[in-house]
Image 1 (spheres, rainbow, N blue to C red):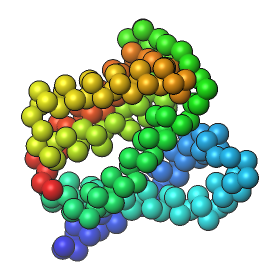
Image 2: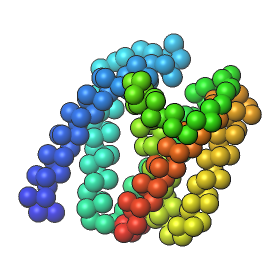
Image 3: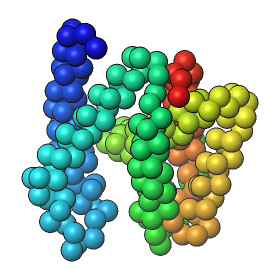
Image 4: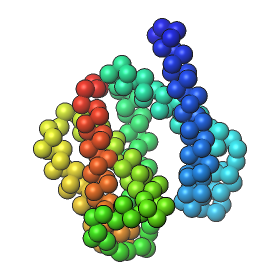
Length: 193
């Protein structure tokens, strides 16, 4: 790696660190506290955890940007990412709203959410499904099969949330989740694993 490219990625890391600092302070911290049991609250509230979280997140995104720039994703990076991603996704889909049941068939409810100041949830629904699209793209799944799998997967997840009282069956969530998968699928078409 030449010096100029190294300087660019150091700048990206520093920029991402400060962006993550703002996101963590204004959007994530309170939500993290709502998911953590009371006896472990001290971990989330500690400055060491916050600093470590910010550094690791900025480093992870910087490494991802570098690999996208190289158009080659390291297998180790990929498998470590998926090892972290899937447990987090399972938790967010099935364990954060235990005992909650409901439904919404309004496909444009996410627009109302954004206008009502709930944009974080909408963008989180998109962002958390981008890796699924990346996986489908990296494993060269055809666009038809990827679309069919994505729709079936998300409808099964949303239905399960309703049936087992783990959240809401929400058509707007289906749309935003599909948007995330599509972004991941299209964005990584030219990246090799």
